[in-house]
Image 1 (spheres, rainbow, N blue to C red):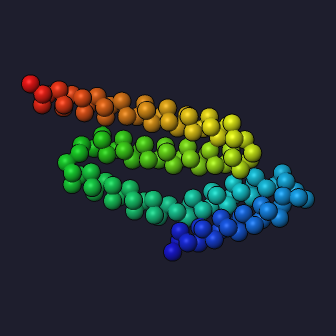
Image 2 (tube, rainbow, N blue to C red; image 1 turned 30 degrees about the vertical axis):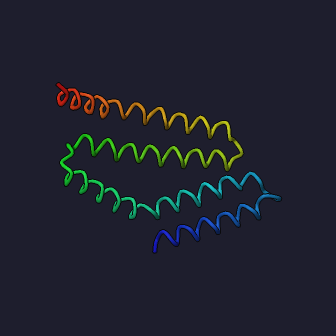
Image 3 (cartoon, rainbow, N blue to C red; image 1 turned 180 degrees about the horizontal axis):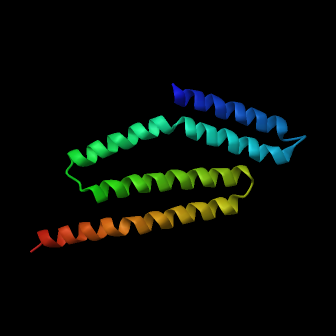
Length: 128
């Protein structure tokens, strides 16, 4: 139910931004950022529930703590990068949004190196 309230908050924020478009365009980005941050804060319970479910699944699958932790951090990086890119697009800075997305992808690649190394090591130990 909280997520539905967050959706309504964002729709109301979009309406406020539309009203501010003409007379006060400088406040438009601030209104969009405020609505987005409050909506993200409202979604924290859902995010916590998802994190706990992923932790349970990773322990049930027998994955070590490092792998599950890396997957959770990668999910967080992806969500933060997407949020930052959307804010840049709202500000009319599509080039900056592209750089935010690129930085997020680079961070994700860096995070996958230990996973790929472990996978390769296991694969090599199986092969004759």
